[in-house]
Image (cartoon, rainbow, N blue to C red; front, side):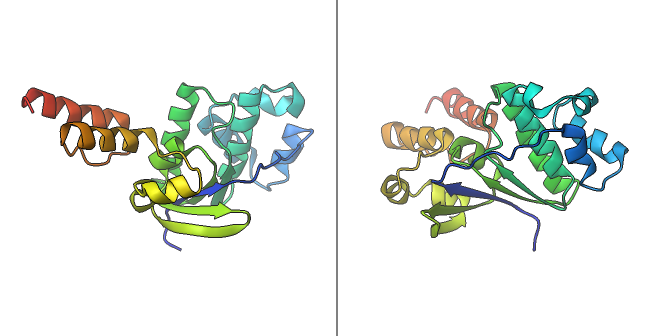
Length: 195
């Protein structure tokens, strides 16, 4: 399989796995303590988290902990990875997922209904409704298909919505960007040209 990031939009609610003892859960992965510590740090956690009970952790720490554990696998599958994360933690997660693909050569599968997040990190999107794949394709093919998104009540990523709005109101084609900073540069370029 070519390493890529696949986003799955699923209408089911996933229940989170329960791990009562964080250290035991990580040691079961069979990885060295050094690798475990590296994964924790990459996910934005302090190594001291290994000495805590899972239920003593905040919701954000629990989410980051699941991400750290997923980093120890060859293929990473993250379920609702942005749940309970603040904007700064989401931004760090985007960087981490891209790092996993580019530097660590990992394939990443993300199951989430957060289309803004999936748009930033995924290359390929699969839409699953009631355990059936109803659509799949490259992210721009999926996320720019208003008819498809409306049919399955899926939110268009904000950055794509904005580009479409500018095209319809001002007849300026900004194109589609993954990152809002890149989009802002395009807006500035058009504004400075007086268009």
